[in-house]
Length: 112
Image 1 (tube, one colour):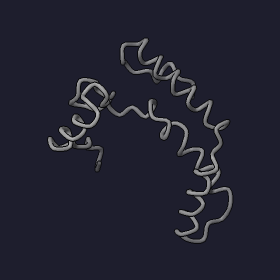
Image 2 (spheres, one colour):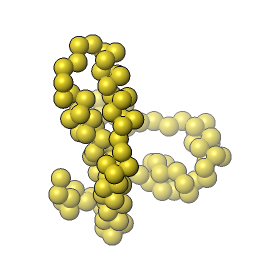
Image 3 (tube, rainbow, N blue to C red):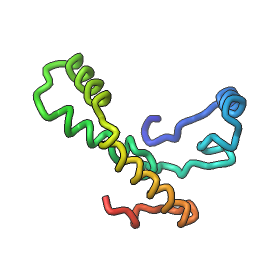
């Protein structure tokens, strides 16, 4: 994705996904279940993981790219189930809110 352009999906990729997962299990534009466009509110990586990693990874000095990569991997592997539980519960709440509002925008309901 560049300059705000939408990601593209080719017909061979669509056929491959459909063959392996069935159309009803694919959440993507141009499939029966459309993913809401530009919806970071529904993606735990966008609303939780990146902020968490920035906080823990950059808590100390990083002298080079190799150390940065190592520290990121280390912190990802050390995320506990107790840390992830509220993230998953929050994601479920967001999905329920989206369903209750007919797939419309939910940003105004969220207290971020």
